[in-house]
Amino acid sequence: MTKIKGSRTKSTSPDQVNILVVDDEVHLCDAVHRILSRHGYRVRTATDGHTALELLREKAPDVLLLDIVMPGIGGREILQKVREAAPATRIIYFTARAEVAGSRGLKDLRREADAFIAKPVTAKRIVDKVRNVLASYPAVAGADTASGAADQPRH
Image (tube, rainbow, N blue to C red):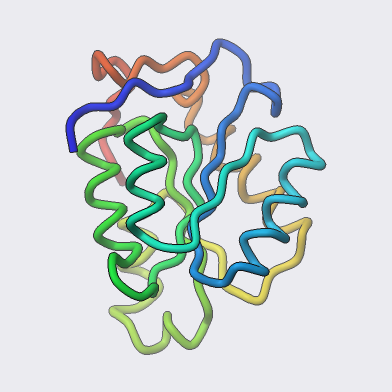
């Protein structure tokens, strides 16, 4: 993936923040879309890795809520491509606790992404996590990913 021009704005108002939700559970994508839209965020969804990459090529999101384990292209592969092409995008891993127990562990997952949400999750937790990641990384607002101006070192 080549560098993508993002949708960064000079405001952190929710209506200026673009979020992409990627999860193979359709009902979960729909629910998260409704939750975040009600709070004013601009939300797109993808239920598979291929669709997610197509949407990412069109426009880099400010925040990416990303399931780790999906058929085909998984969350970790998508994360790597986003880090290369749109480094200002903030990534929140969104996955089931059982997947964490069977993976390299929560500590490693938190190193890869900017935040982590374990399923099942409440609407409040989703909104709070998005707000926290936006507040923790002010480069999301006003960043220019095409020029790399918002590139920041990771944890």
